[in-house]
Structure formats: C-alpha cells, structure tokens
Length: 243
Image 1 (cartoon, rainbow, N blue to C red):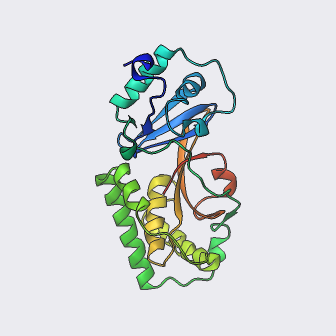
Image 2: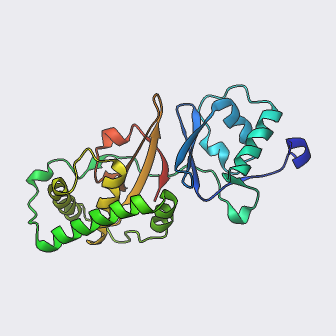
Image 3: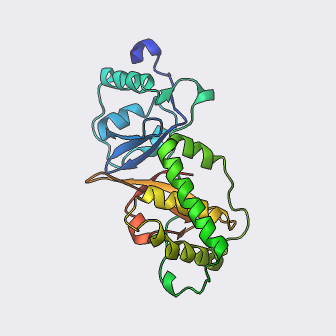
C-alpha cells in the first residue's frame, strides 16, 4: 500500500489497546497487547500527523524535516500489520494524549504520624488486595487490567483527603508485612488501588514515561493529589495512559 494508492485523505485510528504521548521530542506508543513501548522520532511523527486521527495533538514541540512519503507509507503499513492502527473508525480511537491534573499534593508525607488504628478487617483487606494484585499481574495481561479499570467505578462524591490519607497510612504501615517499597510501582499501585476500593476510594491509575534514558512509571492520583508518590517525582513523567 502507498499513500498515492490509498488516497491522501486516508485516515487511520489507534487501536483501543494502544496509547500515545509526546516525550523527549518523539511520540511514545504503549501497546498493551504486547506489553511494549515504541518510540517514533520527530520526523516520522510529523509525517504521520495528516493520516492518524488526533495524532497532531501528540506531536513533539520541535518540528523537523518530515519523512518522505514512501517511508510514511511503510510505517503506516507496519503499524496496521502489527494491529496498532485501524482504518475502521468503529474499532479505533483518536491518538489524543491522556489528560490528568497537575500533581501538587501527596498523601504519603508524614503517614507514620497519621492516627488511624489498624483493625482486623483492614489487615484482611490488605492481604486480599496484595494477593489479588499478585495473581492479576501473573495471570492477566496489562490489556485486561486496562479494560477492567477503564470500565470500573470512579469517585463521584467530593474527595475526602483526610479519610483517604488514613487509608493510605494503613496500607503503608501494613506493606512491610507483604512486600517492600522497592517492589515494582505496577504492583504497588494495583495493590493500593484494590485496597482503597474497599473504602470507597477510586483514584485514577496514571502511567507515565520519560526519556533520556527511557523509563516508565505508574502511580495513583485524584485531582492534583498523588496517593503513593510525590508530585516532584511524578512530574518527571508524561502521562500516556490514565485508567
């Protein structure tokens, strides 16, 4: 397939399991089905903009010389063959980047001083959340988790930060019994998300990327409040997926 044969007006959409953002003067793609990240440099990214719906909103700031049409056509073909793009609007989505509030507060500062008694039901909920998180990450794909939490509940009522802080403090005090703070952020965030759901809190699960070198990270956040990290740290990452 070439751009001339397909027609200059041919449009593509991202597959539902693919997410995009701009970081480090390139477009980063997260392919949940393959559990992999892919970086597309600025020249190719700008050349793709006329063909992928919403792609222009993910472009890097600096515009370089664009790629020749034959390279653009080849890249589009590869992305379609990999299942990352579709020409069926009913099966795809726009490439607009994820949106999340600017992080400016955290619930983890001074958690050891938060007065919140740990009862037997808290310990049980913590154990259940940790075991469930282990099982989900071992036996289920990231695509499955994204589908599950994208269609899950969200907090409709006003956010009670004091109550949320007490719940997070319980989780952090119980955490050394099952795992350490050095465990992967994916497991830590999933376990905390499952734990908080038992208390009526449903923060967003934010996935972000940074370049130079490339790193990926995730955390929980509601509004501008980060649950299990610091604002200063998560600001280093560009959100690529928010569940």
